[in-house]
Structures are given as C-alpha cells and as structure tokens.
Amino acid sequence: MAVDYYKLLFKYLIIIILAIFIKAAINIQIENDTGIEVFYKNVSMLNDKVNFKKPYFNDDTLNDLVDSYIVDNFCQNLDYNVFKINKSEVNVYLDCGRKESFIYNSKTKGEVSILSIIKNEKKFTKKLKKLLFLKYPKYITDSVSVTDGIYNIKDNEIIAYYKNDTGDINIKINNNEIKNLMDYEMVYDEKYKNENWEPDLNKKHIAFTFDDGPSSYDNKIIELLNDYHATATFFVVGNRIDSFQAEIKKMVDSGMEVGNHTFDHKYLGNLSDDEVINEFNMTNNTYKNITGKDMGVIRPSYGAIKQSVLDKMGKSSILWDIDTLDWKTRDTNKIYEEIMKNPQDGDIVLMHSLYESTANAVELSLIDLYSKGFEVVSVENLFKIKGKAYEPGKTYRSAS
Image (cartoon, rainbow, N blue to C red; front, side):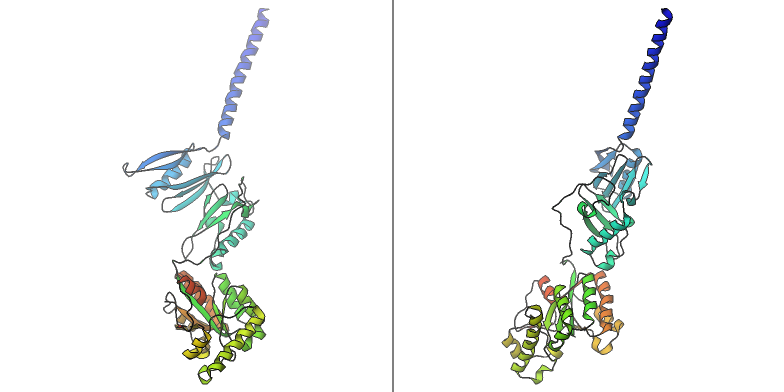
C-alpha cells in the first residue's frame, strides 16, 4: 500500500507542476496577444516650463520613436492620434508644427509601409487621385505617390497629407470611398461628403477671355481649364455659332461664361446705334436657339463702342488690361510671356481661341499662375469673388 501511496503522490505532483507550467505558458500567450496598448501621460519640456499630454505605450521602442519626434521638433504642444490597426500594429500621427505618421509593428519592433494595410495599391491610388482631383488641379494629383503621404487614420476616415511644389496638400478620404481596399476593420459614415474645389479667397484671381470663336480649339482650351478647376469667358461671334454647336454646349456644360462679340465682327464705329444693337441681338438669338439662354455681357469687336449703344442696351462691356497679341505673333512662348510678364489680382487677359499657339500658351500659363498663387476664372466669377456686380452701361478693363 505504501508503494501505491507514493506513486499516487508523485503523480499528483507531476500534475501540479504541469499545471503551473501550462498556466504560465497561457499567461505568456495572453500577454503576447494583448499587443500594443496606449495610455496617456503628461510630459514636461524646456525645464518644466511646457507641459502637454502625449501617447504612452507598453512598448519601449514605440515610446522612443514618439519621444524622438518630440525632442527633434522642440514640441511645446502636440496634436496626435493613435489608431490601432490590429493586435500588433498601430498608426501613430504626430503634429507639433511638422506632421509625421508611421505604422508600427510590435512583433518586428519597427515601422512598416502604408502598403502593409492596403489590399490593392493600384485601386487605392486610382481612388486617391480621383478624390484629390475634386479639390486640386490635375497636374498636382498626377504627381502624388501613396508612399510619400502622411496619414492620420481615424475610425471613419483617413486624412492624407502630401508635399507638392505648390505647397502642402491634403484630402479627407472617407471609409465609404475605400471599402474593401484596406486590411483592417472599418467604420462607415453614410452621411459623408467629399471635399470639392471652391474659390480660395486668400489667393489672387485673374480672368481669361477668348474672342472670335467658337472654333475647333475651344474643346482643348475647355479641357485644360477643367483640369485646373478654372473657368473663362468666351466672347463668341454670332455667324460662327451654328458651325460649332458642340463647342458652345461644352462651354455651357463646363460652367464657362459665354459673352456676345457681335454677329459679323464689324467695326462698330461705322454703324448706326440700331445696326450695332442688331449685331448683338442676332448673336444672342442664335445662341439662345441652341442653349435656351440669353447672353449677358458683351465685348465690342475691336473694343470700340459708343456709350449711347451701351446705355440703350443696358449691357456691361468687358475689355481687358493684358493684351497677349496672340492674333499677331501666333507664338506660344510670346503669348505665355505676355500673360506672365506682370499679372495682378483682378486682371482680365485678352486671347483668341482661333489658334493652336494660344491653346498651348494656356496650358503653360495655367501651371505657372497656379504656382504663383493665382486662380484662373471667368470675368463673371472674378467679379463675384471681388464682391462686385456688372453695372449696365459701364465698361470694365479689370476687376481691380
């Protein structure tokens, strides 16, 4: 019996020891599975003169990354967000004057690329550029690279920041726009609205105008303007409208302003008041037959009109203060140089949509004007931005 007792006791001891090891192993596994946890604590900087709250983690390497950012940037305050992607990864967004973000993996003890949480880079990039184009010119959106971004990932959206020659750009990407493209659990907000372009009142504005069309070059000019969220005023000649009805409709559909440039482009000084008025009325009627709309402003052919005619018509006459002389030079570089010589806020630029050289100059000048802080608009939009209205009978050379 004694032998059986000792065998039984030994067996119980083995079971107890095994249980202890199993429990320890389970605890270790549980501890490993908890992954990254975030807490918050106050820190003191600059000899205790500055205090602010920062994220604090149960991972020393991750804490060191955050602390290095604070020290390197002399932070006196800290805007931050921590988004837990999964058990072992977090996206940390930091900003105290210089934005920075990184995805940290607790298993590898290091940073990983944004691509690690994107299921399909090609589709994500396509969606990103589409959303950016709602807000910025196409030449900017085309230059954006996903891996060059700084990302503040939130529950229902990502705020993305990118560097550009014209300055920093940013976009809010709602999770609804990137469903099934990201490798983490997402929250959706069905009431979201995408960001769209709208005039920036802090920028300078310049109006582009095109005379003597419509023509076969209008489509290219309109597409270029659309690529920059820009508008322009097209002063069309009445006897050309029927031959270019598609171009006229595209002007209207694209939000361009269409102005009246007489029917036959005659020198109006040689006509009676009634003959001049008839020139404008015939053009308006031809335009209205196609669009169902009346024309607003006028530009007299050769820029000359009697005040008595303006008073009788009750119309505003739009002239210009930058003459590109494109009809004379037919030279892309010279046209571009005239536009860029000394552009001022409120200027109105005269061009003609009959020449390929003019269309090419538009493309060059749009890029440089945007980089110099200008937005290109129609005369109508220029006046709205400046808080002005067309006054009947008045002639304008600029909106300054």
